[in-house]
Length: 288
Image (cartoon, rainbow, N blue to C red; front, side, top):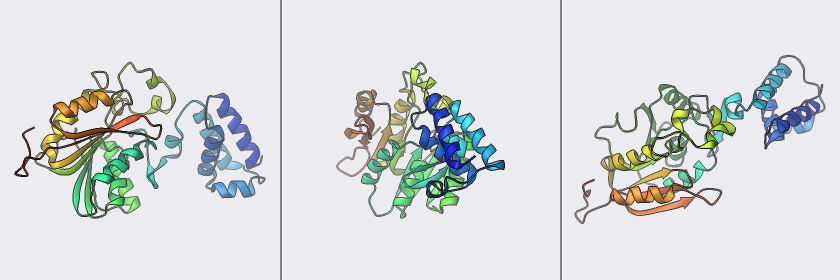
């Protein structure tokens, strides 16, 4: 059976299973199973595929038809132009989070500095920042050992040396450490949110998605704790749910942050909020 025929059959199966990108999914799975490029598929699709590659492809399609994320099936996902290894211990990096990277880079000068990525997962945010600001040092922390292992592997494979990844429950392992910029894409989904039963989210680690207090518990903790780890005038940048922007702005304002503002994601929804640690006239921190 030819590549073209197998792809058409697979796309139909995935569409029937509810995939909104059935043809693309089929092509990505085929490229992985047969170790070919998309250009090769378009050029030589009339050739036959058999043996182990075909069996591997059909197994991947079967798993995808059950809803398993493509990124987990092929073990990688591109983010900010970086090809990252992913597995079931990490969230799958999403395009909307690139808006968080853009907001952070706008606050990171082209001189030297220190940045912190909280709940780093694959290391996506930390590695994107480090790649764009090679004179900065970027630390990524995650409480899951498996996630830190993935992030470290990604840094090695990509040759991004200006990073450090640590196992830490938020700031627990960072006593005394001070940063110019702190970023976080924390758990912010309420436990009863119906979206947890839909799409790729069904297969991602629940601990990286769900927070108490209607999804605000970890955001509340980060807002309070980050003040003690930011330089005067340093920035805290948080990703959150699109319905949480006003609550997060209120948390930051009440905690004494200045210049608090929310920015939008690719869908024009308020999905990230920034706040600046205040500076007194003598250049020192105001007390948290």
